[in-house]
Image (tube, rainbow, N blue to C red; front, side):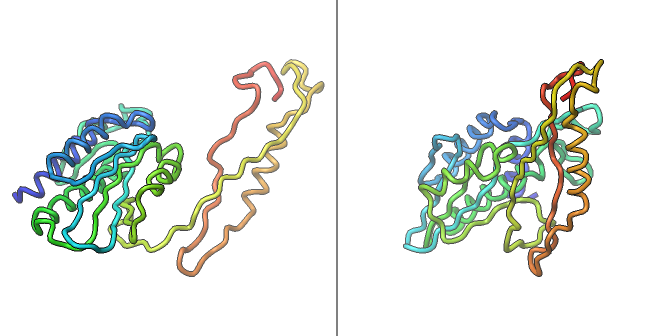
Length: 242
């Protein structure tokens, strides 16, 4: 087996086994720093948010290329439904399994190993600079931590390693989060007639939202309109009309 391939798989397994939910990226950040040091990256730093940014500089001036991937993952709500250890990085039938294997420690490991291999094979005899960014808090605060990176790194090109079925994606539809509130009148749930239930009002809003047709773009495709969260106040409040 090719040593570069073995190195890539081992790194990805280490990243998966480190866990790292949003806000707990420290163990993976340390693995990145260790890898960058061992592979002769020219500049390695951690910014105020906890992002890890490393750079390989070619021996001639040229374009700057940034490879971007987040280090955090969503939680595992019920490990018992997994057929493998979600934090084990197990290889089964030629596939590597674990929380974050696809989103997105696999691509993070691939970017790191590819940059290191390219620098080694060329002896850094290339124009430009290659940056690798391991980003924090993406699952909870998408895009926020990346803004900190853009303050100091001004790349000519950016490659984001999110899963795409190995297809090149040349754009992004963007994202907007809309918060809708309905207001009622609180009362004890034993006497609901004295109150006005805000949840019933919200039910009408949700019904109306479901009739909306998202816009469609000739290149970016169909938009998505989806309810992702709903809360009542007070919560919990089993004895109160919200």
